[in-house]
Image (cartoon, protein in one colour):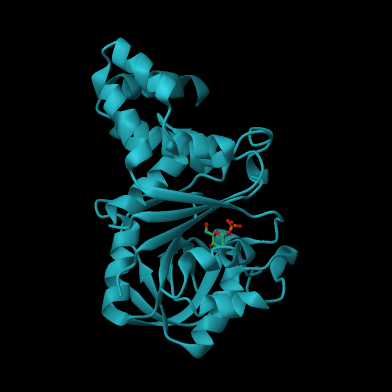
Length: 290
Ligand code: G1P
């Protein structure tokens, strides 16, 4: 069955990025000139999905405003004859059908996904975590839909990670069944040092079958006292086939200050309009700090 819906949880406090996130959502921080969340919505749309549910928390009105029309701005751009910019701005509000729901208590990612059950209904759906921005020639979630179409079960987006950061992510136990594809035997959320199953981490992209909702319904809180999606997926793998796919592309963890800077520098270096000036600037400035 075609994947028609995507869920984007954007209700976190962004504590790794305080004080910047005190009154504004980290999902709206710009990577060069576009808010992070727009990259995610574009990935969804470019993968052929048209309906999106964004799970929001407090202080998230700017997210709704960004994807809605801004008539005053449109009129002003038209008056100034800035037609290219006008088209860009209008495109944002027409890109997809975006719905919003509020997660009123911060009970964890598993709980946020559980809040999407009515929107999703009885079909497999995509989940994209906006902390993970993936730069690739083919959208990451489209790559994963391809694997879902082939195998028919849930698919988790994974990558091999360095030993010292495995404890930051969901960790995979599984066996490789074809190039880049694993059958999942188990998962552990943020394993303690030495308790990881492998060096393969789950990185913010999922295709999940609706059976997850029955599991999340009465899942106990896990690590950090939160209802963990990883724990739910671990159970799901005990009752039906779950796969993992080592996706192609460069992944940035923009929930982290360093990852956010990496994304900004590298997207700027890819931007035809500013790259030449920016390279000269970097060459010059880096010397002063060595
Ligand atoms: C979440 C998930 C974790 C996953 C990570 C990817 O953790 O719980 O399994 O590996 O995203 O970025 P968070 O970073 O929100 O704590």
